Image (cartoon, helix red, strand yellow):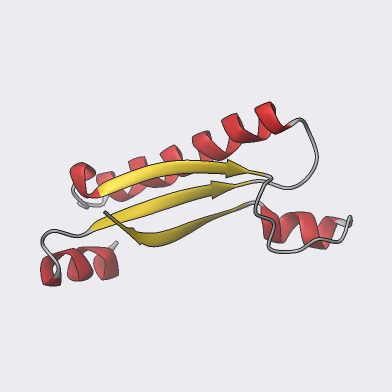
Length: 88
């Protein structure tokens, strides 16, 4: 949260996009919802730590952008994640 607040103070027009990702198991619809809940949870946590809510946007990619493509638990763990990117 401190790093994000520092970045936003240096770039006052900046926005951080919180991307929710899931593993390959489950339907696309289910994983889009899960990714949305994951990203929203991360946003709520950052807001509790003092990051301005209007500077955080969320998006869910569900299982569409895997970091790892093997069908094993260690790979699925890598795909259940949140990424932070610069947004508009």
